[in-house]
Amino acid sequence: MDNRTALRKIFSTLRILGRQSLAIRGADNDENSNFMVILKTRAEDVSELKSWLNRTGYTWLSHDIQNEILELMANKIVSANLEEIRKAKYYAILIDETSDASRKEQVSICLRVASSNLVSTEYFMGFYETASTKAAALFEILKDVLARFHLPIEKLRGQCYDGASNVSGRISGLQQRVQEEESLALYVHCNAHNLNLAVQDGIEDVLDVENFIGVVKELINFVRDSPKRLAKFQKLQAIAEETNIKDAPALTAYCPTR
Image (cartoon, rainbow, N blue to C red; front, side):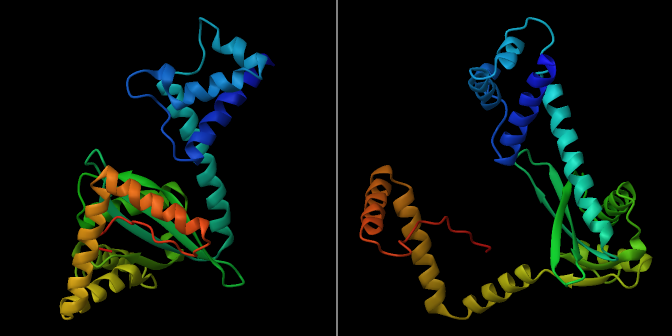
């Protein structure tokens, strides 16, 4: 029973860190990692966990065990999502690819379903590493994911990507390859990408707006690049909040593509 109590605390600690998107391990010392610090803090109130952490033998705290526990929890979430997805008769897919901090290309896959009341829900199904972003490679990933989740492509009714030629191409793009398998899988260019492209093109024809955005960008960088200027700005924000000014201005990082 003591072992089970300790294991439950290990599971719940990893679940908390994962839920809050916090790092689990330390940079060079696991004893100072978020995982171990939280466990030691909880051990002050849980004698079984304290005894477990003081063991010299097997403690189930290695990196491999942490990864295995996280994978088990992830599989549980995916299984719960699939139960909801299968309740719907049809589904749609949303796919996007990007490189992560380690410069590995990751493909994110979401599934979208609608309830009998026409309330739509999107479920994130995971990241999938790929060495190629060509349409053929993405199509193989998609087929593998659908087969793994036991979702028939015949039930696919929608596909949503950005406008890149590898996914939107009418001859050999991903959307065309999917429609060759299921002709009712309608392709929709992501509205957010469409809006972004339209706004960018519109701004290029309005000099005043383009200049305004340039000034705002330089102003944000001017304040954020100096600790002293940033501290003064934060002081002004605090004064604004004290005087009950609604929507006190904040410095949001400038994004040139959104």
